[in-house]
Length: 487
Image (tube, rainbow, N blue to C red; front, side, top):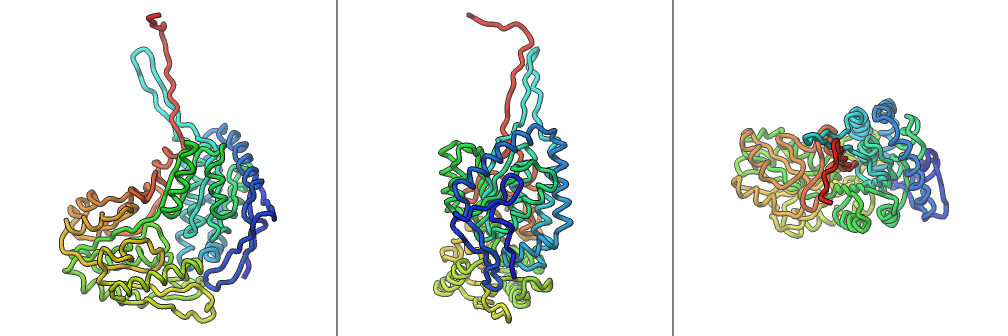
């Protein structure tokens, strides 16, 4: 199985290579097989990418917004027409099952391009009357933006960052995760085919030093990162040296609260989506599932039953529901957390082992795992695991669970399941998180802002809120009469 791209990078509307860059391999997580070899960007590649973006941005920003919108909408149409091809590549890149990638990855990227293409002509300022004089404001593009992606949603993240940036008149240089380097190249191809100027969306590959070079480049105006908190700290600090705009969408240890009047099937389904979708590799996952005493036994019985029925296997089989984790390193990390959970006294209700998948013995497989009797101070209740590991904690009353749910440095997401909507809204108001769900979990439509609070991030992606992070306001005061001066 091979997925070798034409070249490692996409710059100025075409593929580009520099074999002097350090080589690295793209691994299919289901088999451990090398499916592509790429080269990390050299300083020359980085400079070419930034220079071509700066050149294209001037041309792009001069277009009428409706013209920019048409390009983005054409790109969205092309992505939807090629959804299967792109979904299969996403599965090779990440190991996520095709059942999931067909509906959640390229399609959500297309929706972002369609949404921001549609609102591009509405990005404007306001008139401010001041008696005889007046002022007006304009939202103007920042210039060259850098996007740094995570490995869990490579296609979606590339589009979530590109769509608002381009709609506002910016250009972008995008660095995918070195773990999942393939999908962003196809998005770059499609944008060129849709009519984007050469250089408007460039893709450069590499590890941390490439991201650091981009984040500190003097011609870069904005950095948008999706990644871990430690990476976010480094990138934020580097960007601050140049007073660059930033958006940081980082990790979490999010609470999902199930009150005893919740619908059991819905609550179990929400908890499973918040822990096992994408093999648990979702930043917003509700990995601390707080279950009220009155519903605990019924919840756990149904959870164990439904978890045991999850179909694990060949990710290209559309009947398969759970694939491997993304890499050998991530596999070792997740299995270590499972051992820590057991050693610290949590009870493993289901899973906790290594499934044997015939024909895929070299893959990075982990059984979907549920721990019960978890205490707040346990490692698996405090640290982000990023794998299919759910921690279930007991609680008695509302005030108690809110205090415990908020007892973390993270603040990305939270969820509430209850039949009492007054309580649902009351609890949502008190939870310290940027993105919350009531009687649902992990839905992220492009129309809704997405992002975190506390250590989980800065700024918002998606919705009209993203426009504020890819433009700045220019104010113009217009005098209409004689200048009054004391001098």
